[in-house]
Every structure is written in structure tokens, then in C-alpha cells.
Amino acid sequence: MTSQATAGDRIDAPVEGVAHCATKATTDGDVRLFLWEKYVETPEGKPAVLFVHGSSMASQPTFDLAVPGRPDSSVMDWFARRGFVSWCVDMEGYGRSDKKRDIYCDISNGAEDLAAATDYVFHKRGVRAFMTYGISSGALRAALFAERHPERVLRLALDAFVWTGEGAPTLHERRKKLPQFLATKRRPIDRAFVQSIFDRDHPECAEKRVVDAFADAILALDDSMPNGTYIDMCSKLPVNDPAKITMPTLVLRGQYDGIAGFDDLIEFWKRLPNPDKQFSVLAGVSHASFQQKNYRMVYHILHAYFTQPVPAYVGPQRAHPASPPTARAHA
Image 1: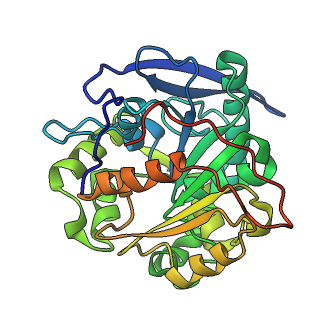
Image 2 (image 1 turned 180 degrees about the horizontal axis):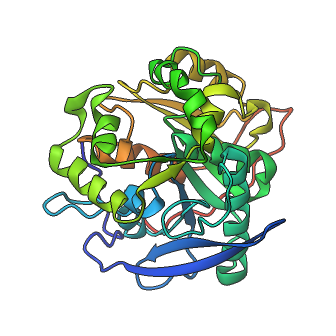
């Protein structure tokens, strides 16, 4: 399935990338966070989407992956060509951000990173609120950030999310290694580990050349990853309270995803207070949505939610929600 472009889309336009450095103040001193911005022609006057990465890879391999012969491989470019400014940030301990502190870099720390990153973008570009997408532990980070700073999130998309962990075979297996994760702040990764992300649920969901390119990009930046999100997801769930997530929210669950239990997510979704919410099952997708064969289907679902009209009526007991900015073109 592919998204149909409209006349206003710039599907062949060159996309500019700009590197930024934000600073997060901590009790151990300042921490530098790497931000990556992409847009067509100018970032001015456009809605912004913030992409939040998961436990075992930095942001650019996940959201700005180039694979020869694979159209629209970069979701950041895809959204930029449809009128958005795309942002991502390497969490502390990942990629091009600082790795100097001897900490686990847990989900709460990641939410603090998002607060620092959005502070920076506000002062640099004047953006006050974002369409926000998180995947896997990035979804937990994004959700916690949304709880703490609801005014900064216009719409929230949670992909491969986990609430209590019930019905998640991947987490069941991972909990067996909890003592090992607690014993050290970081865990080594290699090409075989990246391959295992795609093999554990349903290997046919992704092409080998895409997995290889993904591994190349991840390993060019990191040979180890922080253990904090693994520890949280193995022993501290739930870390998110759906009652505190007040903005419109989309929950995405891959058909074959072993970390996102279906019933668990439905119970979470039922408790979200905003009626402008959706739940989408991603057919033929396992865990890493943007690296799957059906990646453009995922783009379409996400873009549709981020650009849909605000409900004209939501009931007599609710205030009318603030109208989010719309993209210049809707695919």
C-alpha cells in the first residue's frame, strides 16, 4: 500500500538536514544532546513532528535510514516532503549525544531529554508543540513526556508500546536476563543482535537488505546501549498513566509484535480520556515498523492521524480541543 500524493506535495524536492546541539542541565553538569532537523526549502511556518527512538538504536538509523532502491526509506524525508519539519533526538547515552555519565539512561531520563530538546527547538525555531511519535521504549518516553508536558504535544502516536507487559512474549524472555541488565549500565550490541530484532517475531516482515542497512547505520554510531529502558520494561511497568495522557492519541500495534500485547494495549487505549483517539493494527508488521516491508502503509496511517480535521463536536461536557496546525499538503 502506498500513499497517494496530492498536487501540493513536494515528493521529489531535495530535503535539507541540519544538525543541532541542545543542552540538558543535570546535577552532574550539562549533557549535550544531538538533534537532527529535516525540511524542504524552509522550516518556517510548518507543523513539526518529533520522532522518538527506542532502546537499541539512535535516532538517525531509525528515522533517516537510506537504503538504495527502497523509495521513501527515510520517514523524516517523507514527512518533510509533505509539509512538515521533521525532528529527532539522540537520547543521552545514544548515538551522537553525550555518554559520559555512569547512569542507566532509563525512561524517565529520556522524557527529560525530550523536555530539553523541545526547549531548544522552541528557542531556535519558535515551535511550541509537536506531533509526537515514539516507537517501543521511545513510545514510553514520548508518553511520559506527554504526561509531564501536555502543552508541548498536539497529537501523540505510540507504536510498539507496552503498558503492563501482560501478553508480551518478548518481555517474558527478556526478564530472564534482568540480573544481567542490573549488573552493568550498558550492554554490547552487534550485527547478530540487530538481526534478532527482526527474527524473534516473524522474519518475513522485513527485507534482508533493509536489516543490513539498519545494522550498518546503528553500529556506525554505537557498539553498546544503555540498560535503563530494558530494566524499566522488565521490572517497573507500568511507567505510564493513560489518565494523564490528555491529548489525541493513536496507538499502533504490529500484527506480529511480540513486545506489544494486544489485550494490554486495548486496556490502555480504553483509559485514554480524549475521545479523539484511534487504535490501529499494522498488518504484516512485527516490531520495527519503519524497517518493515509495509513501511509506507505505516507512514500513511501516521500522516492521516497527524493531519485529520479536529472534531467539530466532542460532547457537552468537554471543552473544544485546540486546533493543531495542518500540513501544507495532505497525502
